[in-house]
Length: 100
Image (cartoon, rainbow, N blue to C red; front, side):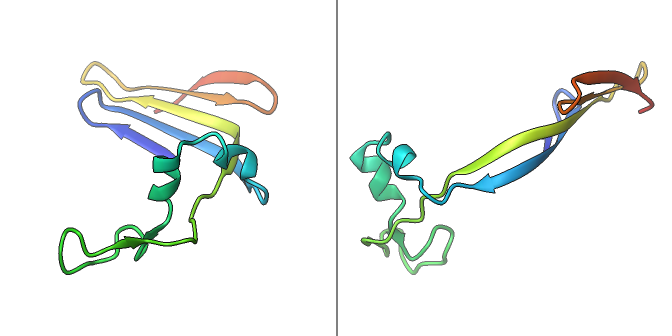
């Protein structure tokens, strides 16, 4: 994953291992009815439609839970006074300054 904030000139990069939950019923039960309905929109989100209300809701939900385990993180701060960069390894809990 890569995050960039242009106002702060800050970039954060995260390496992770992902796992899709096969049984997401525990998470599904924690969201309210309106939120559940939002996961059933048809056609799927970002599909082109002819009018602002040219969609419906179905019985099929697109709800998915993805668990991420962080492996490492890289933080880069850009600056006119000199860039600063650091890394953190979550697997062995080490961090270090690195060359930008």
